[in-house]
Image (cartoon, rainbow, N blue to C red; front, top):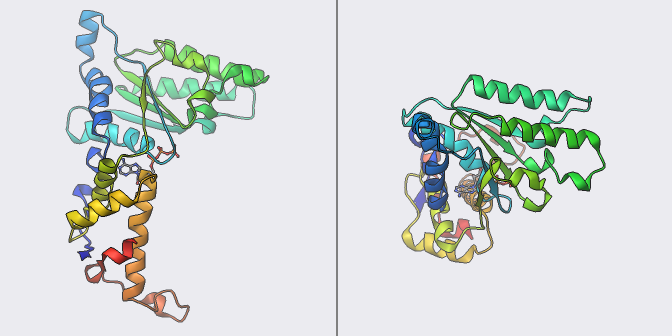
Length: 273
Ligand code: ATP
């Protein structure tokens, strides 16, 4: 059986250690983003090009947002330099007033350049830059053109843009031309081995880790689950076990005030099933 403890991961910072099954992506991002941001002088000296943008695409819950958020923390944690991180949801950059969305974007890029090296992350970027021909909406066209112009004008070695989408086909193709989002990284549904690593990540703060056998078994029976599903599975297992230990915990009779001792909670195989 496994036991939960209060022990938290080192400082509880979201870094690459909190990500399972994506070691290839992490390696690629070290090369594509971290290296150029930290060694801009090399690129300037030899007049070589670093990617301006990297596009993350793939089904929901596969770790796109997680990886982007961990990226800046990872650089800062390793004391490699201070990288600013700007996280925006695509649709949040849109404004109902004419010209305001474009202004928001310009302000964002200016801010990123002022505090460079920086990473701008547009989650659900298809909401911001949908295929222009599919909309007869001049306002949207203008937002996409502004984004393209801003990316074209970027100083490549100090600001990098990451976009994430579930629907590559919904994104304006002009964004995928060289010099814009010139690298694309696919986040697939996790393999059996990747699911095992994700489960390890989500149980690693528990006092007693799940046995190798249990992890293998869970990884085998969760085909078709994404990282978010596996995280939900671990949450459910802990809550299920807590309710078993404290049967009256959800009764509305004052027992809600019962103090739960996480050290007493032992998550067993049946709680996962
Ligand atoms: P969407 O396309 O819906 O925005 P996403 O690909 O951005 O999804 P995330 O938001 O990164 O997915 O993942 C949701 C949650 O699932 C994360 O907060 C994390 O807890 C868990 N998760 C997903 N992938 C992984 C992974 N590879 N390792 C560890 N946890 C993961």
